[in-house]
Length: 340
Image (cartoon, rainbow, N blue to C red; front, side):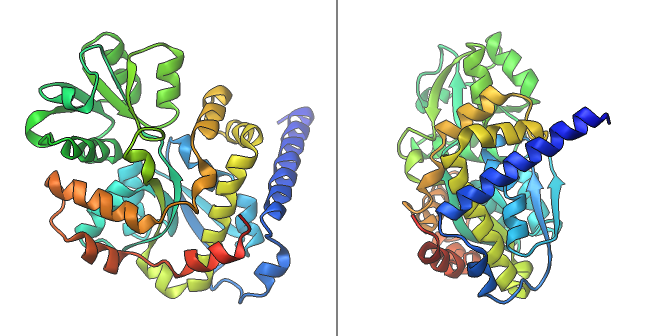
């Protein structure tokens, strides 16, 4: 690496660190706050990295995690939201943002997962051809998802069940890579395609299809969390102080995404989380990252559990899932600590 390139990286790194540290101070987060707690039981923390820039808070949380006492921070790369949840369940990762749907499905199957907090509202968006103007129009249609039983597939199942469709009988789901699905939609060879950022941003930029449902703005989806902070149960049991400190860093980073979208978007590009600054910035300005206080994640779990039960994807009672698979003590404490 040339000297000039190294200087550029150091300069970017300095600017990012300075911005994030300064923004953190706006939320009343100081070294004294962390120092008043016992040190984390472990200095190692593993999060999940997937090709979704709506997870920006955990991708800019590195320095905030270090400020919470973590010195060994690892991002475990996975292909999608379903694989992300599986990594947590298998103990390959400790904590991560995840769409609540796969978390519910895996908890219902008995996986050792714990939901700790809600992170942001919305991000999924359904695009369709002229043959699809509403969710009900999906009946008898071909819909592409990145992976069957993955995040997009589960979200579409919940949407279909909400309007009275039987997703297993009424919709023909096909799995294709993102680039292939986009071209199939452009050619009208599929009827609809649901994706997470930066997919909707690319579809808009290329004028492919039209938005049928935007979970960031359309009710009832916009009234519930999309991504929730989820942890491996054993990690929470063995490391409660580390769990709270990691969650604090994620919530701080969440607010920073709302406060400094331009700088966070640049950070995502500079560190290889995405190639497109414009798509990243659009995502950060579209998603209400500053609303994590406004809703309770328990309502989200109950809502999606009921939808997935209607869709035949789970059989467990939502109240049982919530009782066994949530821990709100850290969130309740952090709501009081972090300034609004």
